[in-house]
Length: 209
Length: 209
Image (cartoon, rainbow over all chains, first blue to last red; front, side, top):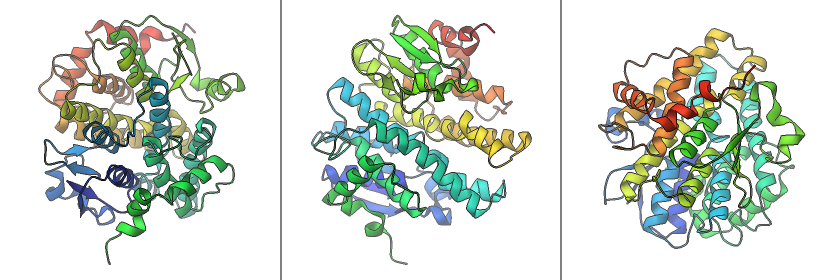
């Protein structure tokens, strides 16, 4: 499989974790968001939305959107399960993932930060406050929804953990205080020891300069 | 079932459509976002995230997050299907839903608009430009992903249509030009004739003043 990837994209990072958890052989093609490569015709021709990630499975249409890709992977490669079979556990896992995927990440996305800077002339300090505000509000909700660990998924990581770990990476990049979220900090620390998460880390997949 | 609902919330509107499509008997309790009722302890005690929608199914824990609620409803009440069985069709439907659910709606959410106004002192015109910018960017992607209709789901509505129709309502509220999106405009017009969509419309569920 071929993943259109950018090392620092949270949505790509989620998909890299999922691919690794399921031991799916894949290679990556870099789409450099910071250079605007996602807006170039070469990429738009493949993915009209001009966002990453996208996954060429070799089995059908190009897949886009991290949630849809992970859901597809979970059906195609059932073990280990990322979406629980039990309806209540499944609803909780999806809700936890969406607290990050809908309520934090889109508002802090690079293209939004660029709009704040270039169209609204928001300064760096105010931009950083914005960034941390949405993380803190969302993580407070997620902390209240977390169980006893060691993962959001319980004994093993599930889809919610694939969303959490990239968000915690972003939180730290912007020096977001995490003291109010002890459960999430502990879950993230556990995941940082898991080979599938380690291999997906931005520092591990960052292209050479 | 009891839906914690606000008439103008897109995420609530999606869930109302899904409940109606599946003919699930339910009543609503109003959580007035404009009055800040979602932040009051009475509601936070039920849903720590303090967002709507939330669904008390009477069968287990309170469900939150529109995607997770619709996914749960689709498993519990299988007909009509909102998530296709075919893996490629399912991935497309989820991706279409997420173009709206992740890439448009969160950035234009009421709490974000309030932050722009109160924290960043963004004026009404600039706020409206912001609102329309994310809609236009997202709908352009979705137009390219749409099939021949009459619904995003093909012959019948699916989860993507439950996300599209509320977003088109929002687009019109802010006078967003829709001329570049003829497929989406046609799909929305079709859905506006469907009883499940009609009954879920904000004008139909708006509480008396």
